[in-house]
Image (cartoon, rainbow over all chains, first blue to last red; front, side, top):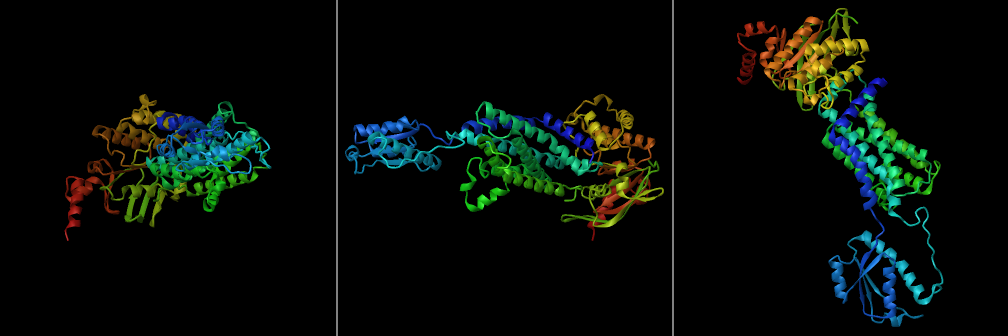
Length: 368
Length: 248
């Protein structure tokens, strides 16, 4: 292998990136857009849920009940005049939940008696419904202690959330963001790069020179790895300054993980490119095998542990699944290298696999 | 480097590409120091032949011999001395002429001194000196082809394979391009192989090979072939064969 040839190919690729508006825009703009989208738009904690309230008790207790809902800041009440109107409000989407308080609510509210209220939840949006359901338990406890004093229940459960004490969604999302951005930059751009050479015929010219395939491959990957690393730094700085996500682990370990993950995706992009030889097809394959699994199946948004068995095991072949979990461990739990070793080894194994496949599939001729 | 030229001999070449039998027992010889024209309609197998000579395709059957005065050599021995210019526009639109030369110079591993001399001579010959900073995407069709040619000539090859180099180029630039090939032939001991589907270009070559359906129809000096076939142009020669094919 001659380093000068690698360097020449890399330099040529840089000219392409810098002078091609599409590649440049994708490389520079994507990380910024992704950080804004995922950093700000994703919110698992719902606030100010509109709650239609029909109060037929009209008592001090029922007002107390409503107050407890509203003062939690999760709910915003919307007074309605009948149960039918409450349902209508749900139908029209003006309310996400409804609270129906029966006339006998206050009378039944005494020890050794049973009082109930009805809650209707819009189940069409099941992630919101889940959050609302979660809040109800807490509110019930508050109502009980307000009505009967703090010792009304024999056992109280005191919950404390470790690592992310306020269950801040951003703390959950941002550590995984590098994975999504690397997926776009490395898989997509590398998938395009070799396919472009095949498509416009320059690969035929390259192969007719004494340059070796490994020199072409390394030269092509070099600029994109630098770009990926820059994006990783960008996300890291944003995570610290703008989103104030704590970073409790070792930065060097994190950097190493990013590097291996990045290389795995570069190799995957290369493999796609080498096999398809068409830009359009490469792009679709990159989306299908890189971007979508990285966002949907890696635990970035939806936890892998809750997936059906088949998909749970499928996620094991996704580099992003390992990277996101060890990235979160490093950010939030301050895990040591030893803690995250299995994920690390899995990433390395996937990297070697992809690289071997990509170099073996790289053709030195133009046979169909 | 051995300065004696290289000649090529192709014997009984067969190649199937997917569903098509692209070459059907092709025989041809190419002599050092001459401009050889491979003439034939679209789909005759011209590009497939060049790709075989360049080691980019591997024949199902048959043999290609690369010969020097002192005997046969292998393709890998010839590697540094054979250059190829593909038919498709294969240069990089976002690179300038200067950057193209720098790029290929590194791939061909030319020394600084060799490169400086070669670069000056080639730019002068192709009259591209004034445009070295221009991007390939901004070059005219003729200039683009000339850039492709000088890139492939950087390493002073003994064998030069040009696949339809004048395709889609205006008549003036075509004449210009051929002049370039003659100049090259005068100054260097080089075997030039040009494929073309322009029948009039057959007369510009010193030896022509008529290719049809993956087989050689005729080989020889262009004038001699026209005399032998009693035709005025190579169009007529091909029309004769077409007529033969169609008649029962």
